Amino acid sequence: MDSAHRTTLTRFLIEERRHHPHAVGDFNNLLLNVALVCKRIARLAAHGALAGGSEQAGAVNVQGEVQQALDVLANDIFLRAHEVGGQVAGMVSEELEAPYPIARHQRGRYLLVFDPLDGSSNVDVNLSVGSIFSVLRAPDDACDGELERNLHGNPEDELPVEAFLQPGMQQVAAGYAIYGPSTMLVLTVGTGTHGFTLCPNLGEFMLTHPHMQIAPDTQEFAINASNSRFWERPIKRYVDECLAGRSGEREKDFNMRWIASLVAEAHRILMRGGVFMYPRDQRDPARPGRLRLLYEANPIAFVVEQAGGRASTGLMPVLQVPPTSIHQRVPLIFGSANEVARLERYHAEPADSHHATPLFAERSLFRAQA
Image (cartoon, rainbow, N blue to C red):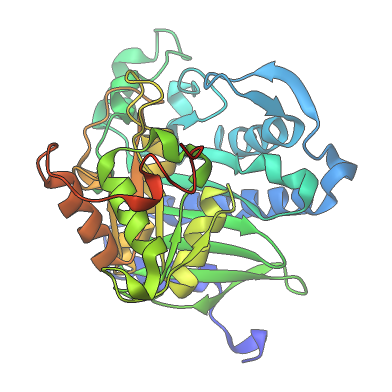
C-alpha cells in the first residue's frame, strides 16, 4: 500500500482518543513527543561512528556500566524533549541514579520511564539498537492536586521515588523503537500491539503492522548459552529438551538465536514468534535478575501480552511484580505463550525433582570431558 493511504501515528492516536471522551489530549501529545524523540535518535544512530558510535563517554552509570557516547546523547534528547512540555510529572532513566526533577508548575499527569538506547554496544558492529519506554499515571498530588499549597515552596522539589513504583499492570502505554534497516515504533495503549514504520520521505510513522500477534507455539528460542554453567535446573531442562530436537521429548527441532539487544530480540519474536530467556542465575545470589523491571521488563511484557504472548519471571507474571526500587532487576522470560507456560511449570516443580540433563551433565558439550 502506498504511504499516502496508510494511517499515521497521529491519526491512530486520534482514533484511540475517541474512546475516551473526557481526554484532553495530553496523553496523545506525550506519545507524539516520544515518537519525535525516537526520530531524532534514529538519525543519530544512523550516523554510527560519525556521531561517536560506541565511543565511551568516560562515565559509569548507576548500573555500573560504562556509558557510551550515544547513551548520553539519547538520554539527553529524551529529557530535553519532555521537561517543559507539560505532560510529564517526572522521568526515570537507565542512565540516571534518581528521578529527573521537573518544576512543579510544569508538571503533567504522567510519568515517563525509559531506556534511551538499548543495545548500544551493538552500534560499532552496525547491528540494531533501540529505545524502550513506559508511561504511568502520576499520583494526583504529583501534579495539580498540591499545586496551590506548594507555589511558595521549592519549585524544583523532586517527585518521590515511590510515585514510580507501580506494577507493570498499571502502565497506560508502552513500546519501543528499533533502529535497523528501517526505523519502527511498536506501541501499545492497551488495545493491542501495533507497529509503525518511519517513512523517510514524509518523516511520519505510518501504521504498517496493526494488531501484531505472537503465535502460541514456536521452534525458536533465544538465550545466552555462555551462561549455561550458572543456570538453574528449570532452564537447563528446557534448553536440553530444545537441543535434543526431533529425537528428544519435544519431538521437533529448534533454532537458537541471540542478538544481545532486548529490543531486537523482542521485535524478532513479535514478527515471527519465539521465546526469550534472561533467567535468574547462580552467579550472584543477591541479584535476582539482570534486566531492569521498570523500563525494560515491564514495557516489553506489556507489548508482548497485548500481542497474545506471555511474559514471566519464571515464578510469576512480570506485570504483577511489585517494584521496590527504580532500578530493580528481575529475570525475564517472554514470547510464545505455550513455551513460557511450560517454563513456568518447570519452575513450579519441586527443587529435588530429577530430570535428566544430558547436555549439561558431567560429560557435556559445555564442560570438560572426564
